Length: 491
Image 1 (tube, rainbow, N blue to C red):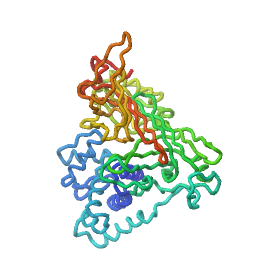
Image 2: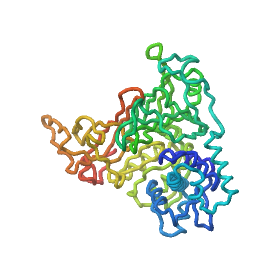
Image 3: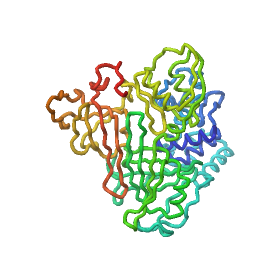
């Protein structure tokens, strides 16, 4: 459990933009990375957070994981103890708020988080734990070359090439990576690129290659077809490159701009590393990755359920009992409530069972960032619509298609599969109607659902864009191509 909580804490620190050192130090000091109760049952989770004083943080975490935050402490305790991800998300949010209030001062943070009457002995214990993380004392590492990186970006692939920065145990510093030279943050505007590219091995140790030239091409779609990425890293030194080829297990790409428009855009399994050269001088390592490759291709499931189980029960079994288990993302609330009249045996690929369950419920099944999602045409993120205009990153003229629009904008991690965007119809170029073709109008509200997207970037070049394929949302209820919700448009 400790490793699971620690990994969740690392992930949440990245997602929420909280200093990882203080997150890990606080959770270790409070519970040693366990999900439990304390203070006579008033404090919950790895960070020992009181729901009485931090209801908003727990509601935030519950909303993130599609859960309803209960009203009684007993029910709240049951939910928190049964969901490590939710509990960790709430803890990291509270830690981040207090760390910000303390302006990065550990003494002041301890007085806020623990209380002004914190014993000196307890403070010294916490300080030692924090110094362990802040001082880079985390254990375990890959061992790439420790030679200083070359100042040239086009060096050969020999021992004089560039070396990436090692991040032990995925202990990610809170600083920004890859700010384009001579660009500074000017308010919360799309100015100043920000990015981070990590390659992790099977032991959870990540190599940060953000200082090198990285080119990425990420494609996602709202179908069972897996999301894929191609990440090309230039001029790694020979020793580091060989270790990435031999041990590279997972690719993580974060990108965006200074301010709020920054976040994770891809996390997937490395399928094939390919070494090559462009001009005999610049060497490159291309990592072809697939989102959820291990679950999709090696997630064999064996098990059974008794009669009386629902479709949701079957989904829980398939995702948790597969040889390569996975997490759940968005699971529709519109699953059929009918129950099995007799027991059922599962023996086969998990993806096949999930696809069958999705289709039998007029839904689609897809993976994003390693999480299983099963949605119907009526399911989309509530209260989340990205308003796109030239001032918010829209580039060129969106073009109407048979069922919606296609557009291009500055790279935006807030745009995800199944999310909604609003574009003023006056900015959209209408489709030219061919002979015999039925003319289709634009969505009256200008609301469109993303069913396919591409993130394309080069941290040393001009490319830094997101391209989306959308369908008309017919007033924000169902896609315009559908006559009713009883039809499976994703089949």
